[in-house]
Image 1 (cartoon, rainbow, N blue to C red):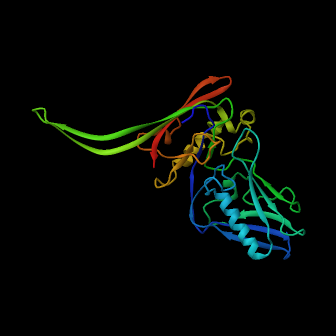
Image 2 (cartoon, rainbow, N blue to C red; image 1 turned 90 degrees about the horizontal axis):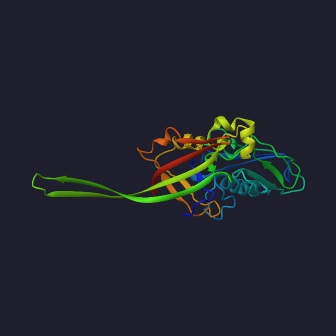
Image 3 (cartoon, rainbow, N blue to C red; image 1 turned 45 degrees about the horizontal axis):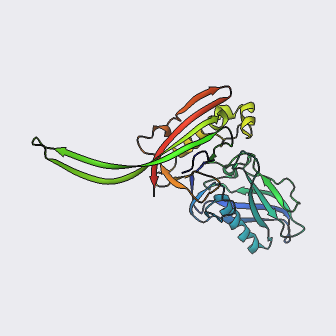
Length: 294
């Protein structure tokens, strides 16, 4: 893989039909109404594929597609575009709802209780975000924070200094007193090592993200809960071992990723091995290792 690219990680979200998204309208072609849509059960991701064209399993894109279909059935006819906010700090979403009727007045959008996620999962500071202007076309819902379970290295000075893959073979050997050796081979695994260098403090630990000066240097909002690599680690430690994190070596090619699964020897999943390499500015190096899942 290429060195010195902007890399990213996306954790899986296992979603059931308990996840429902709801739009509330103070006015529309059919008057004041609420439109609710249900997720299709599956595994989804918060990632940069906001159109769904590259990979096709962005979670918020899926929910908006479901809501658009529900609006079509309800006669409110709103349509949705999901876009990425500009700037060096990547991973913040903006929802744009184009009017189905000139009378449209959008009140809020939300995920109903009982599901696996809320709108906070997508970087909003409220579980019931409201648009900047409910009568505008489009109505715009701008997230303050990065979406949860998604981490992208900063543009500068952070470096994805390289990653490598090596094959390991599990071999059990026994040698008798006369020198005869028997050997059993149990297959190969692929191990990946990812070297992240000169990471700004706010991109590594929440402690520094909570400091306005360090957060500003990174380009995120103060206390953005999804800015730090350590928060990704914390969430990663809690997902099912049956699903895998996606590692994208170059976010300019988001469809090219590998699936990673930490094993017993990957102790960083319990405590991030961040080495402070500069105090002014405050920078860290981090090396992560994991199995590559085919």
